[in-house]
Image (cartoon, rainbow over all chains, first blue to last red; front, top):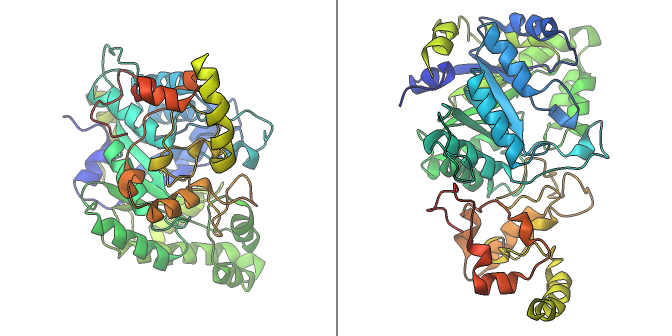
Length: 317
Length: 122
C-alpha cells in the first residue's frame, strides 16, 4: 500500500515527529489561518486543525485543513462525533480525501455543555471507536458503512486520542488497544503534565504489546501564564494539571511567566522523549504559535526533516 | 400485542434495576451491567477523555461516570469480563423503545450495517 502521508512516512522511518495545534479561526478570511500556520512552517511536521474545540464554534476543520493543503502544509484533520451523524461524517471524510487531507484524528469531542452553545442538541449517533472503524472500512474495503461501494477508496493515516489521566486508569490502555484494533495508526494523547502517570500508562501499553503497532504522540501544553494554567486546571474537561505547576508559575513575576512556561514545556518534552514507545510530541500553545516554535527550538527538535509536503500531496492518490 | 406485553414487564424492570434507556439492543453483559446509554455521549465502547479525576461525569459533575461503573462492574462479573474489550457495532436507532428481549430472540439486534466488518465481536 502506498504511504498515505508525509506524517506516516516520517513515523514509519522512525523519526521523532513534531506536530502542533493550529489555533482555530473565527475569520472568513483565509489569510487569518495562513498567517498562523506560517509561524509554524519549518518547525513542525504536521498541523492539527481542531473541530469546534472545547465545543466552541470555529471554522470547520475540513476547510482549515484544505487551506493548509493549498499552502503546502501537512494537515491533521480532527473530527468529532459530537456534531455529525454517520452520514455527515462519511461525507466529510470522503470530501477531505478529495481535497488532499490524509491525516485524521477521530474523537468523541468535548460535550456541548462545555462550549458557547450549551443548549445545542448533541449528536453522538456513532461513537469515536466506531468512527475509527468507519474510516478504516472506507480506506481498506472501499465501501461506506452501508456497504455501498466507493468509486475510489480514500487513503488515510488514521489517528485517535487517549487520555492517560482520566479514570478508569486501568482501562485506558485496553481502550487504546481497542482503538488500534478498530483502525488507529497513531494516537495523540491528552496534555501530559504528570510524567509519572504517563510513564505508568506507557508501561501498560507496552505490556499489551502495542509498541510498534501504533505510534504514540503525547501532547505537551505550553502554559503562557499562571492564569492560563489555572484555567486549564479548573475549567478544561479531562485535563489534570498538577498544583506544583500552577504554583511554579504563580511564583514567577508576570512578565517572566511566558518564559517559565516555555521552560516547563521543554522539560516535559525531554521527559516524555525518554519514555520507550513515544514517537513524537504534539505541541499545543493556545493562541500562541510562536510558543510552539520556541519550544521546538529550545528542545533541540529543529531543523525538521525536509521531505517536501508538496511532492507528497501531488504524488499520491 | 406480544411486544406490548413483554414491554410491560421488561421496561419497568430494567428501568428500576439499571436505569435502562430502552435502546432495544442490550449489551449490559459487555459493560459490567452499567447501561451505556445513560452516558450523555451514548458511548458504547468505553469512556470519553473528559471523565473527572474523582471518577464523575464530564457533563454531570455530581454523577459517577457510567463507564467508571462499567469498568468496576466488569471486574466483578464471573462471566463476560473481557467482553468490555469487544468492539461494539453502531447503534440501530430504529430499535429505540422496542423490546431487547424480543429483538434477542428473533435476531433483530444481531444485525449490523452491511459494511461493518463481519468479524467484529459483539
